[in-house]
Image (cartoon, each protein chain N blue to C red):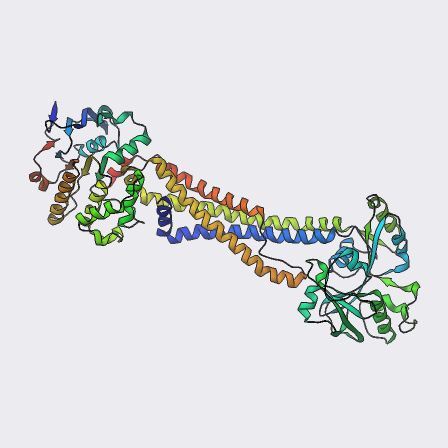
Length: 416
Length: 220
């Protein structure tokens, strides 16, 4: 009955109640959106960053080196010679070192030259169909890459030069799909994996025919004198080496050794990602401040709505008291109104937040090749819900107290 | 000075030396001593304090001096919470302008009054609404009713918890002659059925012939 009374009083003034609900819902939605985006970004970044202890590549920006070779979103810093990093694979502190060679893409999905350990040790992903690449030009497709491009086992395609979609196709670099990976939720879902030899061969062939290539021409100039498909061991190049330590002591020695070499640079993904997130944090905070501001508006809207409604309802309240309602009951009935408005606002905000996150997730997924979802729920939302309900009740307190202390007799006498 | 009604019945309302201070002026009220089932009028011109007198009897306000006993209980000694409950159980109010919860329909308004005392009884609501001829309109909103009809609903509300006392403040002064007649007959009959004390405060001359007993505050 008390809920019914509160509910009927709320819908009796649809516009002012609606405004309160809307403000409350918007602020909760924005808070939730900022939280969900940041949380997923952080967890995706950390998840992937924590898999690799150290990335070794050409000198340049450390963040770029990490973004390019761990997350596959930025351009390479350049190439390094395979022979310069062989000492790392033999180092007693190193558990594994996996080479990566970038250069081509197919419909903006990167073709990554690497060795078998990439799937066996680093991103352990079960095969849905087929097998690992063995011969040059054999490729294994990540789950999203295969789905988005609609490629099946046994299909073939021509790669394009560069790591982003371009018009320049290698007419004789024809890849064959020999394996399809299952969904892993990791970066490997968006990659096309092949052997290092494939990448080397494509690029040597390319340069022998004198193809025009803006980004790689300079680096590969000196390969022109080589034989068609034979790559001399001495000149084998990779984009980066992904290193995992055997011993925690490696953390203090290996980066130093690498950085001392003039052609090499070492970057720790965990550190670089933390720096990146630190850069993004303030922007998220600004959004959060905005959301709390709207939340404050919602609070005052609820307060004013109730105070105004109390003015026109004071006879009703006096009458309730005269009919045997205790002042406590009147207090509770008004608090219930604040509670209900907050409850509706909170649920609407949470639902909207998740739905919009899901819709935005489609865009973010396309953009970053990462899976973003709106239907991830967090303990934080419970706090948001309880906080909102408490706010609703607090906003009802001032009008409720004035009703609690009402002098029934004089209120009823005023209107003759 | 005392006015006594009824002979061998139980004393329900007793007031003694009641007074209030209103705009720096002391207003004294006559002592009354009322038995169960009595009906009577309190007459007086505006400003004579008759509404204040009624509010004192009903415990809606407290006196500057004197005391009110209902059922031998000094209501000044009740805590605010207990007084609210006590009022709900023992007293039904009817005011000149009937106030209802605007957001609720007729039936829900009546049910709310039952809810305050914790005994919801739809049959009782229906029976009373039928007696005032408004049963078919119980789902209507109150603003759809005429003043006379609203006053009939407030009679039902006053009686909904079967109180021993009905206090009516100018229940007919906003009504036309026909509605006045209907409302006062209902009020008398239903109070009688319920064996309630009925006290009507009014300056409405039309009521004077309808009651045998009255107190004139102007003469006091």
